Amino acid sequence: MAGNGAGAEGHAAEADALRHLAADPAYQQALGFIDARDWQPAEGLLRWLRHCHGNALSFQIDSLLGYCLSMQADHAEAWQLLAPLLHHPQRTFWLAHLAADSQRGLGEWDTAASLYRQALAEGSDSPITVRNLLQVLLLQGGNEALQQLEHWHQQGELEGPVLEGIREALAGSHNPALDAWLDRLDLAGPDQHRRLLEQELRRLDLAAIVSRLQHPGWQASPWRAAVAQRLHHWGLTSTRAG
Image 1: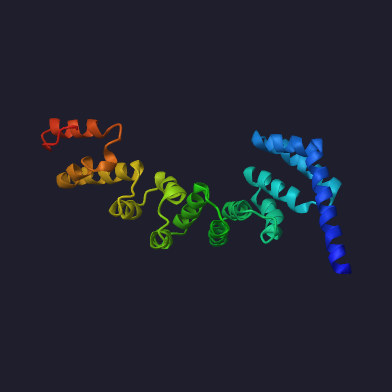
Image 2 (image 1 turned 90 degrees about the vertical axis):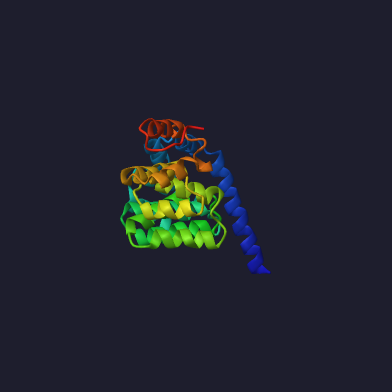
């Protein structure tokens, strides 16, 4: 019973400390700077709060401070702050995501990939987590990115935020194999369609060009009609813009 009483007192003290922190004008001002993405003044205020409160509110303050440092590309110090919090009971998936960002910035791609996967396992529904994971896997080379895509496909997860994140990750990349993989599943987005069409134009693969221009995914493309008209004008296809 004494232990339960001590635990209750500890929770009450923590709750009281949190209320004081939330009411602190410096904390509210720091949150305002973070919302405005004004990282340096936010960092300064959070360091002051850390000094004032010591370890009593280390999770609340250090997680925000790690975020500010990461956004300023101070990845080494961000990692030092975030790594001890990775299993804190109050964490959300963003903690693992931020820690992954810091490891990515340090070039520790294996650890970064593992942490992005932890963020997904802990409930991330953000396309940013998916995008960053796939970008790290692409940096690693090999078949890691394709294996991850196949895993999502097998789990029935290639939709919504996952698909959005995949398309964002591939938007600026040059990976014909992944473009073609998505295309085979009818999941390619505008960027993939454009790159695949460019390949077919370079090869003058007229059958593939006509097929792609008629693909339902291209109906909303702002320049599909222009490409079709130009090819028809040159006598390369009999396809007119629809």
